[in-house]
Length: 515
Image (cartoon, rainbow, N blue to C red):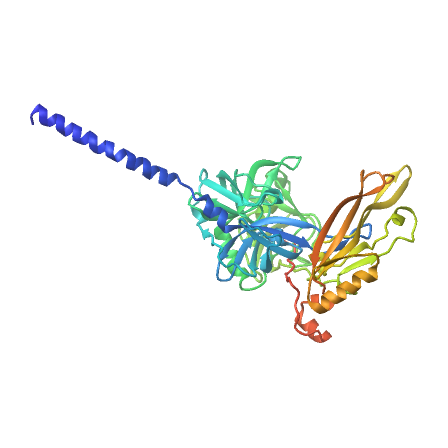
């Protein structure tokens, strides 16, 4: 080949490489593109309202809580989240990305379990909402990039943060092998999706480690999505269920050095029974100061390990416990019982009238009460119209004044007016409100209540006066207490027909750590 041909050949090769560089850069950029919009679109914020309870001052109180979740089915409108997000929820509302309305989409609990902290919700409607893609958490490795989407602190919906997988099997309490990530997660992120860089869900963000002051320290935990899918499949079949040996709270860990004193074989750790189980599968079979060092021929390390070991077995299975009793080796077979115990489902409160709240006139009384000439809200009933409208009652408190504990009004809420069928009416008595409520109930129309909020400039000083702090309007639909009863058998027995409450939820129990 002559010199001229060699030069031309070299220029041709260089030209080919030069033409490929932009294509390579374009391909690299496309590879680095991460579709965060997709992650945000499939994620939702969740707001719940607890049932009304009575506090130590006799006041009716309820709480609003926030969490996150993600849509997994546009056919059944199914959302997955954490069980603790919806625990004790009387009302559940879901807010998709960019939701502009004040009220969210009503949702109900299909089933949930505290053991793996997973809950299945069903939305009333989900038309047009995109569905999440589920990944494979078994393929996740430390160092993989992650994205956490949720509603941190309950006031930052549609937030996304980035990090990496720090560990793939981090045990905390119980039997869950969490994914650990340093993507920023805060209260309110619970139940939200942890995504990989391709936009696949690899876990449900569930918990964080915090400093002594409760702040985020960059250690977050997510339930692996493969485990979530397994749990969801079981929850669709019925209530949660897992094996329980009945040893919860009656055993303590022995280190290998401590176990050596009890002459535990092979130099391993053990559990010592601190008091004999009074009930459950172990009652009458395991006793105080028994030392358990093996279960099904597997050496015992500590209580958390035993929780995981027993939790892998189902109700009715029999496990062989190797133990030392009075210095001698024994073997005890224990057939596992049911670890799940459901709490009772609370029923709506009984109340008179149509508003679900108690009103009083204080104008004839003395002291702080005498200044209020309008109806005062003194109680709100669980699942009544006022509760659903997020109306709260007046509250009391106490202050220590020398040797005395002085009770006092912390704040006062008064109803000053009502808007009905386009007109506003000032209110001066309880009877007037109830008359409007009766008319609205018969017409099936809502009421708009004008409520004044009075509070002390210094809540800790009972000597400061109650001053007007705010005025707000609350929309509610008057209903009877009987209409809130959801139990079909109870409704039939009371002759109440087929009416149903606007929201229905199942209260999920809290018993989750069992050995």
